[in-house]
Length: 113
Picture 1 (spheres, rainbow, N blue to C red):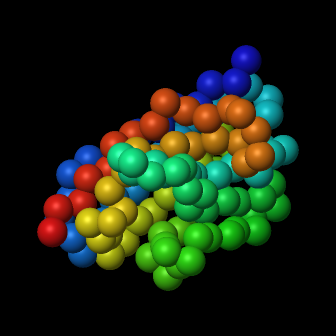
Picture 2 (cartoon, rainbow, N blue to C red):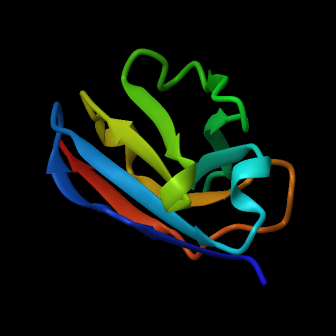
């Protein structure tokens, strides 16, 4: 059974930083590309960043240079380091297996101006 649990969200001022974590269960973790997506009220879900099983990363243009995705397969954990946060980054952030229907419950990130 696939389980993904996100943590690390919160309230931060513009220009601040947060680090999100996502712990997975099951044998799937190291073999799959993992991703972070986000959804703000009234908006469609947006793929923010992904990391392949070999460590190749991709980012949405809106977060390039500010966000960094990484993974620790031994800990079955994927991270999203978010720097220089902007109010438009406010959303629920989800961790999941890229291209699948397996996503966590999300963690709220709120950036105040």
